Length: 271
Image 1 (spheres, rainbow, N blue to C red):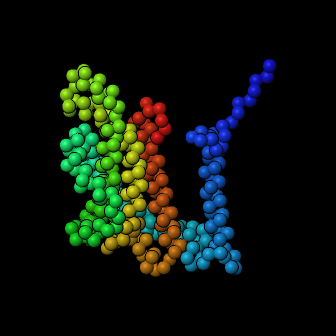
Image 2 (cartoon, rainbow, N blue to C red):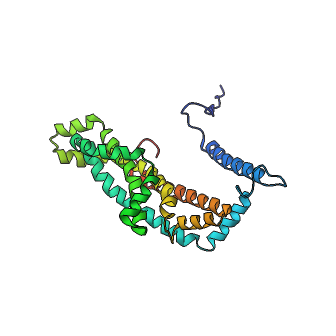
Image 3 (cartoon, one colour):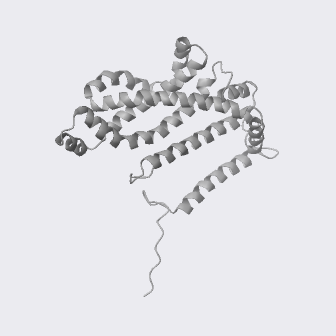
C-alpha cells in the first residue's frame, strides 16, 4: 500500500514551525516588498512622497557608499567601542547585584524601589543631568549608555534567578549546600541561559540610544555623522546612517546568539 506523503505544516498554524526554506522565502520577500514599495513611492515625475523628505532607495545607497569611502568605518568603530565599554560595565554591575536581589528578598526590597521607577522614565530626560555630572566628553556618553542599559538588565537578572525551579533549590539544600554554594552552583548556572538571552535585548537598547548619546558635543562616532547630516538637511545620509546602525545591531545580535548557542548547547529551546 503506497505511503501517504507527509503533510506540510500549515503556514498560519498557531506556534507551528514552518520549513526553513519557507521561512527564508518569507523573510527575503518582506524585505523585497518593503524596498519595492519605497522605490515606487519615491520615483517618477510625481512621486507619492516628497523625495526631499524620503529620498529614493538608490539615493540612500549612493549616500551610504560615499560615507563608506570617507568617515564611516572609523566613526562606527568609535561608537562600537563606547557601546562595548558601557555594555561590559552594565554586566559587571547588573550580574552580581541582580543575583543578590534575586537570592535575598531583603536586598531586593532595599534596591528595587530605587531601580523600578527608572525603567518608566524617558532616558532622554537624563541627558541634561549626565551633562551636569560628567561634562560633555567621553565619560558622559559611556555613563549614559551604561545607565540606559543597567536599569533594564538588572530586573531581568532578578527574574532569571527567581525563575530557577524550586526543586533544584530544595535538592541542593537537602544535600547540605550552604547559601553561597546554593547561589554559586545552582541559581547562577541555571539562570545564566535566560540572562544571556537578554543580553541581546540590552545590546539592542544600547545601539538604540547611541545616536542620542553621541549628538551632544560629539566630535567622533556615528552620532557625530548623524548630527552633521541633520544640520545639513541631508535626508539621504540620515537614512543611510539609520540603516547602518540597524545592520550593526543585527550583526552584534547574531554574534550574541551564536555565543549563546555554543555556551548552552544543552538547552532544548532555540536561542
